[in-house]
Amino acid sequence: MLSLLLTPLALVLVTSSIGSAHYLEHQTGCKLVPPITPGNFKNLTTSNSRTYRVWLPASYASNKKTPLILSYHGANRDISHQVALDKLTDPFFNQDHIVVYLQGNAKDDPERPEHTEWEGAPDCKSDDIKFTSDVLDAVTGELCVDEKRIFATGKSQGGGFVGRLACDPDMSRRIAAFAPVSGAYYIKEVDKESECHPEIVQVPCDAGRANIPIMAFHGGADHTIEYHGDFRSNACLPDVSSWARQWALRDSLIGTPVNSSIAKSENGVAMSYGDGLVTLVYDGDNVGHDWPSTEENADNEGLRLAGFNASTQIMEFFRGRKLPALSSLV
Image (tube, rainbow, N blue to C red):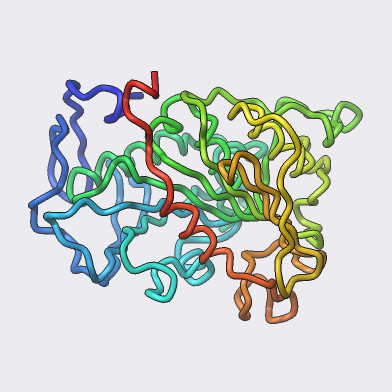
């Protein structure tokens, strides 16, 4: 895979339904008329017929580099569900970041034709790393994107895939920061329950750089993807606190995290390593397999309200991050 940040002299031919072919030699969509009216959405497809949806903030200007967020829905969901859930296109949360929603492939199961999934889930055969790379190539070729400030978030299986992006040698050098929510961090290499020890199982990771910013959210009442790990769908799920500690170690952060209680939550705690470079947010004892929110959403049904809005914290986390200089990525 070619990374635009790592191969500045490379000519990469990209074809997308956003427009015709583009050679990207530090050539972006800056100063081009955008194919999307600011403040609106547009559904698009890649050359492989994969679907994604782009939203431009009303403040978008083609002469100003704009940060971008990739958002991934959960299993058995779709783009529209994620748009309503993360609300990252609501000006209350976001007025200045492009948001790109990607659609997972449907599982090849005649009994569950609408069951969508992401790479990394048990039995999933999609190449969603390439899908993500193709989408970024297309969008950065048509829009004025700040390629040092590309971010990724997602829910459940989509959150697990965000973790895989952070561990990918190429995408970790292209995406500046990561924020999985209720992530399903399946470890398919451990496919026997007798060998699954969530508190110590090692998470495979081949990140292409150090000091990767990552903020994860998980609720204590999540009985879909248990906070303390599980064996599910013939794969091992790590204890989420162990998963976060492993990220801290990858970022050379040694020691215990600094814990901060979350106001108006049921024992919610933010655990911060390295001044927040790696942060695990325990949403609270009452929060289930949800996108944490202080208001009713499709996840919490108005019954499991959190003491905070994950979308607010994600935006604050992303705003303080950008990719390091190229020399630091080698």
